[in-house]
Image (cartoon, rainbow, N blue to C red; front, side, top):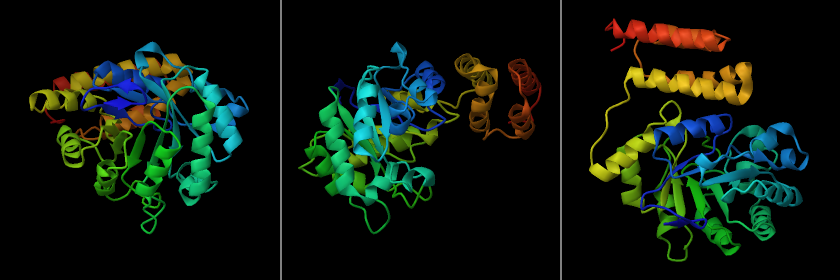
Length: 331
């Protein structure tokens, strides 16, 4: 499959861009556990890039082990989006991705992210200008529409294709759904099967198991599957999906020892990247997910969410693992 000039395997897996989640540390962890074919940065504000804010520029730093990787930008002012795309291009990503899907109120209400779905002419104008302004492929990530009464994804896909994008990722919900209810892949499949659509279509939404990923490929014939929330606390998901595709075998869940080992690696990498305080704060959202399905782990999670030093975090994890090995209460 060719996505944004990238030659990929038959069943490519994409890591979804998630603000405050898919930073360089989490991308490192996903690459470490294997199975990810394409990654994208956290979304980057076009205003932040134009005005050279430190936080925005830091998101553009890429590493060789992450490739292929795209930089995702968002905004609602054409001139700033063009300038932001050109700044992003100077950091040599494999492609530029435009976010027309973020449902968060503070983003959408000012006309950016999924807010652009209420102004399709402007959305297309921005996309066209970005495509013309850079020398690398441009892709788009969006949703089915603004609400139940405006699921215009098929006509939007054709317009985006006409202005030159080289890949489209569709999340199977409207903006008004946020992340509630089940993702509807029916319209994603209709876009993919439409004879006028020639660009790659990537499906996104509710992929949490290898069986679910295979079902979406087989039923809707998408060119790729993007995984977001299902990977938080479970970066093994990508490699497990690939193993299932290749062998038909479902791998067992990672052991507690495996989880603790990876969590410690994640913590150390996070602190290296953001300093002790920032690294630990960032890890707190991951801690809950890594151990959420483990019986009697409430005390562990509470300790991890309130400790403030690396050494304390590591001691808590080591003590937990030691107790786990000598007790059946976590089974």
